[in-house]
Image 1 (cartoon, rainbow, N blue to C red):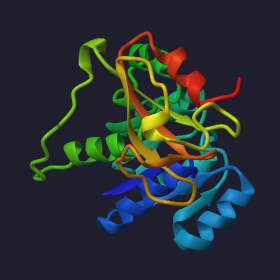
Image 2: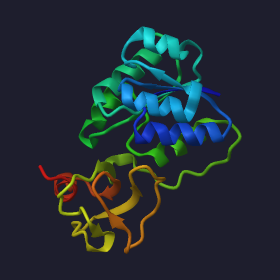
Image 3: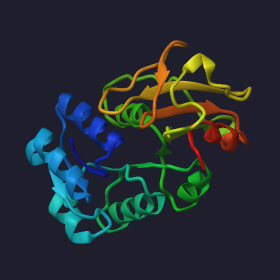
Amino acid sequence: MFMVIAGGGKVGLNLARELLEKGHELSLIEQMRPRYVRLERELEHVAQYGDATELWVLERAGIARADMVIAVTGDDEDNILICQVAKQKYGVDRIIARCNNPRNLEHFKLLGIEPAVSATDLILNLIEHSLPGHGIVRLLDLSGDQLEIIEVEVQSGAPADGQRVADVELPDGSRIISLLPRDACGFVPKDSSMIRAGDEVLVILDPGLEDDVMSLFRTS
């Protein structure tokens, strides 16, 4: 299967690594020059330099023959636009978008951008669901707005910076389910796992707790 991934940050890079290991073909688009250079060094001819909201960049990346488009930039508006172009102009049926702010999920749904998810592992799980013959079982269903999953980068000096997972004073109804350290693979943390600035934290929570949870990982 040939896929186009827009966004070469931590999520896009980890997705590309996993998908290449599974034998898929892909193009990974990144518009920040220093990051693109690092991607090209690691992934060689997979990385494409440019703004994925530009048609000529998408076409150079091979969107016309893409079986799936995955938009995981850090900007929700860009992710929506990329997926709309993929569906409406190029007829790509399989799209997955990263929603950076869970409050924007309804906007994704109203515009027909589904599934919209917010974590590397969930995206990989959805890809497996869309491929025939894998027999994958979905372990977590977030339908009905009963639960939310948010992803946040830990800022230097935030309350959780330098703390063990067990010592982070999360509100009732929330739990850290994954840590993605800088320049390392994500993992399910133990109580003794340390949280440091630059790490990405995945939290599952009841609706309405977003601000309380985010305040633990950010300074403003």
